[in-house]
Length: 182
Image (cartoon, rainbow, N blue to C red):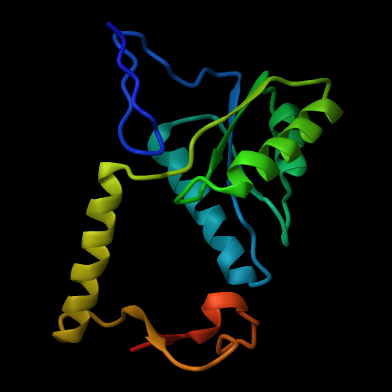
């Protein structure tokens, strides 16, 4: 019997079938995008790590908005490399409007402009068990910094500031957050 859990809530299994990315499949990892170039470059680093660890041949970064490459740009690069299908994987924690509406609309537009290349969109990272391990690792690392065992730990300190130290406006509830390194 096949058992499938909601991938936004944890691990998924699909019985005994082997679902893998083929040689002609491309993976587009898409984040929100930022006005800060440093934030956008982190996606490139993640894509490089993903490609190296998984062995997938065609993996491209994309930003949903505010930066390039766009989803359309990434689809185009995938097709140029010989992709016959694009798997869009959102680098988002939770499902929301961007995952349900914006990314599907942008992917559909890109597909249409590229001879209707087939595509699928995966769930965001969600409540996966490994996310607990990642968060715990970050907490332990910052505690090691406080103890003087490691050199650097980025933390957030509540302040009444409406921008980051680089002058980027944060807006909304984020306006009370000041980014600091201790």
